[in-house]
Image (cartoon, rainbow, N blue to C red):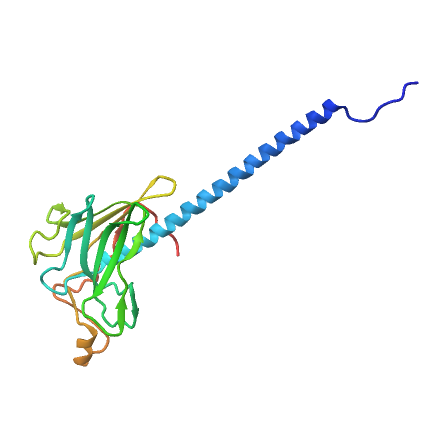
Length: 243
């Protein structure tokens, strides 16, 4: 009676190895796709969060625009590739100062500049309305990189203008609109759109003057009405992240 052979043939071994290799390749592709998708989602969330923080900074500055003097309150013009240079006074409080800063009103400037590694960045600088010896201020800080465009317009009567004012001493805009276009790492454009009604003509005494006059906490004196600054109207660009 012939002896039976219970082992595997060479062909069976080759087919098994090929099938196992195919299964491993499919599994590796699925795992790679899941990991890649997770990384892209994480990057998108981080970019949205950063865009929301940028939106908050710009919105706060614009919502608390003030006019501590009659001339040179707002300066708006085009520079470089058509990006806006925007300088104004704001009572939103210091953001780039170190130490004790008793002055609440600052001259805030937004300007687009080229970056060393290529591309453009949006920089924010600020100076106090009155110098103090208790604090120093950094150079303009980078607010956003990968900037495609930064456009600011002021509205007077029924028209928007990218230049403000036409003459020194002109009134503050009735409405300000700032649009920042950022290039995401996914190649898509993220739009930050902020519209705000500047505060009424507020005059806030510097801390030194307030102390000299024996005043308590700094108070804003409204020369027109006593309405609080209107909150900024956020555009439909990037949703504000939850905090």
